[in-house]
Image (tube, rainbow, N blue to C red; front, side, top):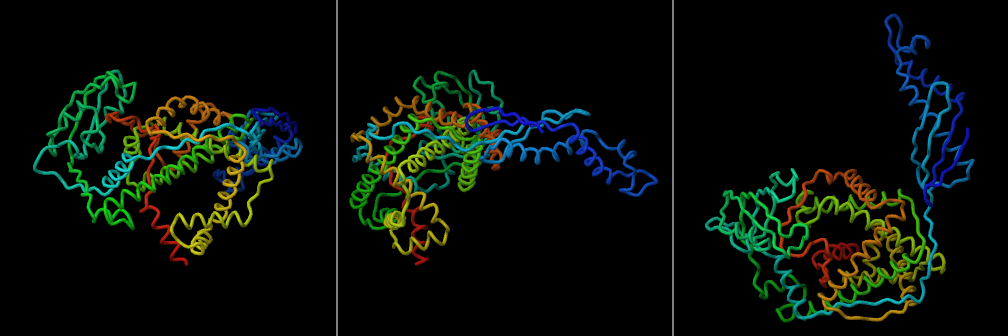
Length: 523
């Protein structure tokens, strides 16, 4: 056996292994004998056909494939031992050649452990950007609560009006877009009054069962720049029509949405305080994210592609579960988010790559500084979570242990300890911003943020296109039919949903309740 190595990238090496022809001949004979047992020829019992005769009934390609599989694994292990390489995960084998009476050559692409060389991570200058919470934020939160508890009685005796929600079959023909998917009918939910004006005007007055063709012009200031000024023709059939009825802001509503408030004023006061807390937490989270990102940009980081693929597989499964939990199809999810298949795959890939890169940075800081997690750190983490969940420390600990989440809590405690250390070592100035100022600032930094995420993917040795395709593959493996899902129709006149809204919101109390109740039940 001969072995040569080729360094593909810092975390991937190729072993080119050559197995001598003599070993190949032995392996082929073993493969032939194996297949000969199943050859059936009149006059001979099964398994008793002479090998010389059976050989004529066996496909040489099958023999070569079987021999290659027999030879590759032991020779790969021997090559690893000879070179002293330490694989991070299972290698990918590629058969190069197996000609008659010749050597067998195969490649083994071996993933190597991540490599992190930290750059400067102390005395970094950063801003802690805190959103200003005003009366409008409180009012917006109340409107979101009202919308969440809205009722939708069926409309039967009038036509569609602004504010109604329609379930409709929809086809679209957009100028300059030759996409067969757009011409296919799809069932979608439309809230009248939130779309481009021509489309909403055409829907107004339609009744259940009615089909109508609507010509529309996308305005010059439409959120999606690619659609500005384009003409489109929509064919719409209303299948169901419902009126969106928001609850009155009375005592019944207040007590329904908040566990302690009794009046509208009490609710506003409590929401204002909760929004202040949320704004502070958001500011801390974003500061930590930008701090770790700054360290990552100062550092040299590489990690194996297999690590990224595994992370994307988890993300894809979680997204699939989320979509199914909401009783939605992938097409409906794309329509609701306003994202294309490619955007979903790209975001999944870049987000996963960035998380891995940042985790590696934190781990290397901890190793360099000797930061470890102690029992006291875990206790503090559990106490903090118990306070947030409004339950006792004993109940919270019992819940964590029962659900085998102690390792996760230890990881969280360690992460907090590392981040606290880094913040103490940084030069942080505070700045307050309105939502509008924060969104403008984010837009200005968007290109830099995208480049940063792309660099994170490059740390795995993948281009943006390769990472996006890998994410799509992960989605397909999880059961999501992402590659065949119809693209969303651009109708809503609001800003693209792909951009993160810079608005403070209160965590959903109802979502927290089951956890607190479960913890209490363990006590």
